[in-house]
Image (cartoon, rainbow, N blue to C red; front, side, top):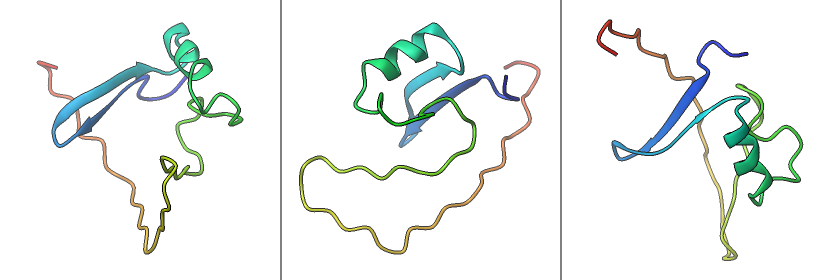
Length: 77
């Protein structure tokens, strides 16, 4: 489906989630999430971003996005 079928997300170097595109587990997680009504959420490798807040007043300014280069996998990985 995608060049990198398994994705992981880390915050401050600590892996907080790992998922595989198209897996039953990912589909279940999306169905159970607040994003279930967002068409295509979690099903595309590239799409518009979604900014969220948690019921407080929020402002976004000067948001900059850049594409990160995927490092080559070492044989031991």
